[in-house]
Length: 257
Ligand SMILES: C[S@@+](CC[C@H](N)C(=O)[O-])C[C@H]1O[C@@H](n2cnc3c(N)ncnc32)[C@H](O)[C@@H]1O
Image (cartoon, rainbow, N blue to C red; front, top):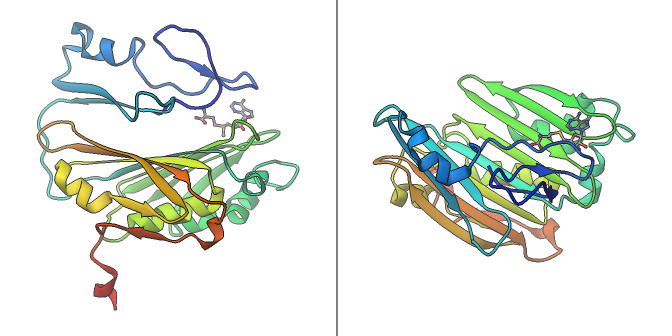
């Protein structure tokens, strides 16, 4: 889970964060963090690995904790895509205030969330006075979205698991998510049971309107990799932005033509 806005509760290793309104932001890390996870306390796990990705000099990083009962090798790797977005566009964020949208269903439509994975079945919820969460299912695949729209510490997270990259193009999926929020910064972490070279070939992104600040790949085991990329808005001209995928996620567009 990526560290995000809000005040650090203390200098303790738990790194629990509190947003200005006082609610606790989820922290799925084991208490004690990476060091504890690597320690004897977790030695009963078959195989485990914990590490932090991202620039050590920057506040936002990607904490990865992996545990497995044994080596897994799959012909059809499961892809997990996680996006963390901060600095949401104010107009886009305003949709997630009850004063502007009558219901969660209205937010789902007005924001463009309905178009992200249009065939998914969405269960959405609107918080009072603002905020939005949804969980969605589509056959064996799931997705989830959580939005904190308050200006000054706005944040949205998106996660999709189990979508076939040959069916759902990664670059287009990311573009649809970004269109809902126009964040000033975002990161994307992709995990799959493929090696580092393959995940880089399939998942390296170039996003017009954004500059890629970081790109790191870690192999978790013999056949698992995590690819973390961080982007910052390059110009104000998001409207003109267009995304291309450097090395394609699914077969090249030409094959469709
Ligand atoms: C969508 S919830 C999701 C929180 C989640 N822990 C996360 O990881 O982001 C956050 C938004 O709902 C609002 N909210 C209102 N009541 C809340 C509550 N009881 N608990 C959490 N968030 C609440 C917050 O102000 C914020 O805008």
